[in-house]
Image 1 (spheres, rainbow over the protein chains, first blue to last red):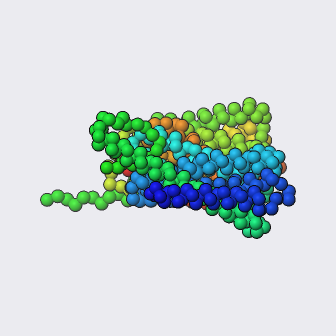
Image 2: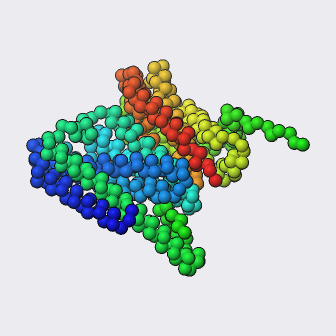
Image 3: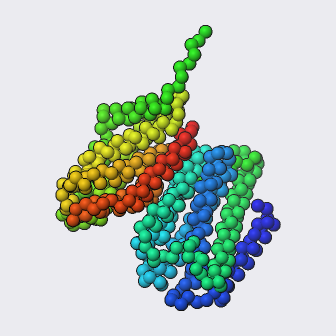
Length: 242
Length: 235
């Protein structure tokens, strides 16, 4: 994505996020039971939804990578998982704060949504170590894609399995969104949109950064020859730019 | 003038040949199964002391058996591709004009066979050392059914993860890190299925929902492994 479009997307993200959280803070009604702490819902739930969708998106990118053998799809999958993991840390932290406030414990084991999210997070946390421990770049990309596809298919299956151990403390996110009163629902949807935009924006920024680095290396190589660059081990995919 | 090349062998023949190779290797120099069996017994002893319990029942018994079998299985997964990687088995296989998925099927069957042998040792040992309610026919039948489903899950996912990790420099670290979270749905299901089986008041019926979930897990990961395994052998 070019500079001007990236700038437009940045502005749109900031505006949507500010609007969303202003709506959440000032317009949406205060929750009758939980009071102010319930406002963390507008941060926690969109982050969780976006992070999980990001994992599945990475799986789709990985399928495209194995089909086309084009390194840019591997880069897309890598960046998608990277940002989803960062959001995942946020989800676990905000979830723990909310759980302490409303259930009295930071962590509740018989709660399928928490547990399945933690399992998925732990699984994806091994993605970077896996990449880092494979030196050959082609092999690294291919194996990482196999991992991303397997883990992407695991996300819905895991939710199904863990949720089957029913407990109803945690609200069922997608089905209970319909029960929200109007103002809360609007605020929630704007926050969700803002979080999605934020994800896309960060994803675009990281792709732009990685592409620029690859171009810079290609230029350096042209100036100094191959000895000017020491090969370096990295978990990140490397684009070959001429 | 040259004779027409012989037709490539059928996948079934290839799987049979590979499986015979695996089993013969293990029979000639037993390496994986003794290690798994010894490890499972040691784990049971560790459980005895760490839980400070002479006998266990119900959910606790289910957990002890599941964890013991799972950790022992991880040892087998770690070793599954080592010989092929170090002694050139992969190269030989890739040179042969055969379907690559045959290796997935053969390795999964071999790992499944190792797991069955492991369970033939570990389950009686568990019943003898720790289990409170005595073994009955129903309990045995339900345990066999549950472990069969669990073995399919461990064999398929173990083969996939083993093949993924063998090319990395830190494979002994990578295998448990990836396999444990990936297997968790099957572990939850196994534990939920074994808990009523080991109930103190005699075995209760297996919950059908969990049978379905573990079965679904086996099916999904079986198909998934079949779809992606080729990419792990390309070189």
